[in-house]
Image (tube, rainbow, N blue to C red; front, top):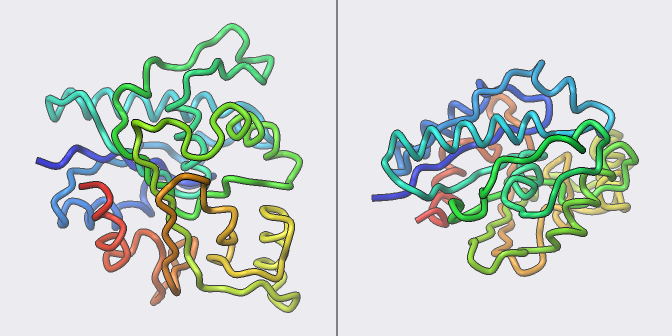
Length: 231
């Protein structure tokens, strides 16, 4: 039987937009649960502050899923910022870069119960000053596909080429990877969504977030493609 999969939403997102992804995984034979966060749960993280409350919500969901499915391992799927937050959760180094976290510890030991980490349109790099503090910690402590006993799969959508006339995509690509004239999913460029040593996948015509009539990482037809890596 397939391991249960825990889905961590992206920055400022609630669980609701991921219900299509959850249903598609279930239909494909992969039990799935979304971390039940609300948009307001992200407010304490704004401005590059600590994400420990999101990590704790992820851990609470993971622990409950293992009880419900009577297993000791899970798969993780992180969309957008959820991907690098999942890397913090998996890691073993103290997450103490914020003064508010000096007297708090992360749930442990997460690494021992994660089989596969799939990141979907995750910005694994950033030039944006508010994001750098957290991401620099992640990439300095856990560069690339850091743990060789965890299967890392990084999915990047190729749907939009950065052009100055597309102000949002162009500037988002610059803030994420330093170059706006590249391909990406409209928010994250291909290069930033991949990790050295991971199974890096490029999917054509996939947008970062859900839009009516267009495919994103959580569309059923897309989920069936990357879900094979959870087997």
